[in-house]
Image 1 (spheres, helix red, strand yellow):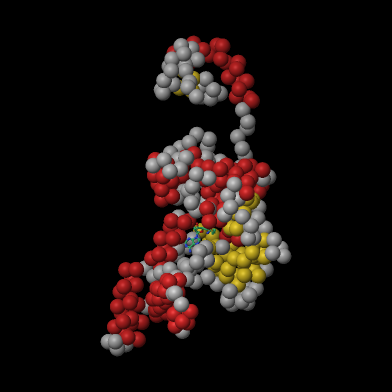
Image 2 (image 1 turned 180 degrees about the horizontal axis):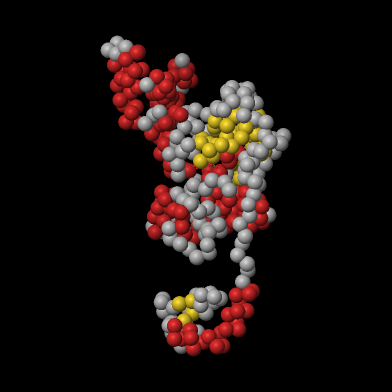
Length: 366
Ligand SMILES: C[S@@+](CC[C@H](N)C(=O)[O-])C[C@H]1O[C@@H](n2cnc3c(N)ncnc32)[C@H](O)[C@@H]1O
């Protein structure tokens, strides 16, 4: 909208806005002073009519209060995570959860919303608008609960740079600024606002959404959103048809005090370097699960050389353990083995995909 000075009608970029009603523009303090006598009444009226600023609601965000199996705690480098309060046997359903917010592919004219969920396609604007609409239909308390979840998108500098580049190249219709019209921040857009720890419902949704059953829908689940990722998880998500919700189920025995982690993607065939890229691009974090932590490539090379020299019988077990530290040794060896195993699994998987006869498949499987 083109604006002009309320007194002399001058147009321009340097117009100042009335600080009280935020409605009238002036080219200079002189024009504003001249207008005050007549503007005073409507200015006060506008100020009184303006909606009161939203109060921030405090909600109980301990979604696991009173839970028998698990609770939330701070985990170094990962924000909050879920830990077992008692021994959990393999197979146990740990948590079941119904979505608080859901968007449907049908509402957007899409046939496969899940596979579109990480693509900044033209439908992006529509998806964001729909998330925002559904968010605004929630009660204030539920809105506060949603905004208490992690948002790695709004603050994700890398994703922001990619979206802005796609926008500049004309491949999507909106800039980052427009996609993330922030609801939980002061109304004036502040360029650096995304870097200051603010959140948006769209960002929270994108960080945490999961499919709703096998339908063409995505949902936001409050409790399930608290589980961190691991590339060697002890639990997994599963859709439970009977309760029409997602559940987290133990994949092996879990000891009291152990962090309960799921996997956000199929990490079986990916080495640590590929996995780290994947979590960084997809969710904006560098995975710090045990398998990745001990697979720092620079350390890995050093350790692999050491392990090889051990294999050649050039170094005793004791010497190697003394060099690395007994506590780290087991984990590092497991990580090296895990990376090597994942690499050969990836190769095998590619060969299986290319196999042109049953006998070839049989040979590879063997
Ligand atoms: C679904 S939320 C999990 C709960 C979250 N930690 C919280 O405090 O609410 C996903 C976010 O948790 C963090 N996260 C999850 N797994 C992680 C991991 N293995 N290493 C580092 N950060 C992790 C990342 O910030 C990620 O974007």
